[in-house]
Image 1 (cartoon, rainbow over the protein chains, first blue to last red):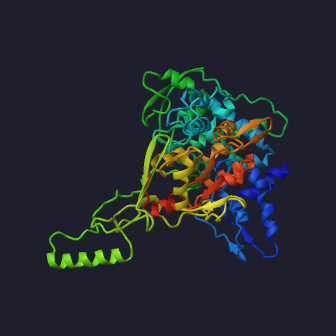
Image 2 (image 1 turned 135 degrees about the vertical axis):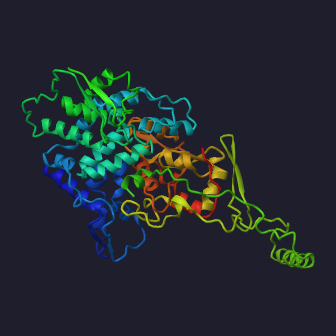
Image 3 (image 1 turned 60 degrees about the vertical axis):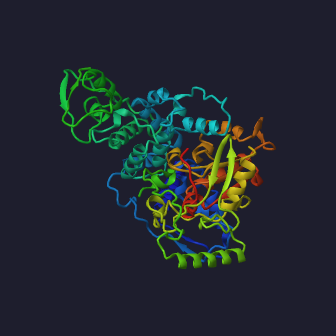
Length: 288
Length: 244
């Protein structure tokens, strides 16, 4: 556990660019060793490109005496106020568990169903399944058919991005801009219940849900099962504010993001889809 | 500029290349005829002397001294690669940027791996005319579909770098589509296609990552080439692109 924590902190540092690589002419092998270590294994997916070390190792030209990576103009760990995701690594949850809980939370938000409904052959589909099918079709193997996959495999890029962020101990702000940009470009499928009236992704709620879930499963000892779902005795009304998402409203009233479905069901007449909420709109929060 | 933009490589901005405008080099019809004739004759003589084409409307922006453009057919589609003829054309938009944040938009080494050869534009065109046209090879755009759809090299197919990673459950299907034959736990690549991989260019790590992912599966180094210039250099030279 400690090892993973250490690796993730190293990654965060390396990625933030605050480290200095010294290529002593007598010591080229040290760089190669670093590149082939856990760094590459840990960040095998999309965000791996952030690490400059492997590319340096691949250079066949003589390395310069000294290369200093200056601090880039991006959000670094020091700047961030909120680091709830980062805390996940310090409570001793390992990569596999992180993967499972990020997956669970996304499932609860309806992502798997959404992806299952998406035709992998449509251009809008940006998950690995869709991209693989697209690639294979272009390579002239029209007979390839993508078989139905388990939910875990269908969570696609969003899942791996979140997982990556958790494992690397990124600040929440980073996750927020990462997911919003990805969603804006149509590269990841985002649960509709997480879309705010402004059309952005409500990452606060997403992160809160993951952290909550993690708190319930950490330390290897299962704490007394928290009553994650609160009952609402009487139905109430709620006026949508800027920045709200259906999942956030559900979380607020019932203590679980997946309860967005109840709110959606109770407001079907005025709400065509969970991502179509409007600021100022009045929603019925049904009694459960 | 965020990390995501670079790594997964998308942007909605158009790259803003203008379409080719011919005729910029033609002499104006209103000029004094005598002078024009004299100049034309001189030009003609000069061109003849050094063995260049002598037609009055010769396009002045060629690929090389001996080729104005190159054409090939891949999978039943015909493509022509030429350069933008407007000599005052400049890049605008995404590919005019000089200072993307690094990391992650860091400068890539010349080689993707120790054993995979790096090639340039003319070798890419050679590859398209020979290997790809005979269906013995593929020019692979390793960027994500969002980028690919905004414009790519004529004849390229889109195999996003993420689909070649271990984490993709369909990775083996892609390797099989490239001509690999899985035998138990190992691959037989004797019938595998030759590949040229590229992405956005010297500031893009996606193609190097894809090269390494293929090598990890065991794809033979001699069947892979890395076009490091990528879309950045392709656009800088005003070369034709297509929207698939």
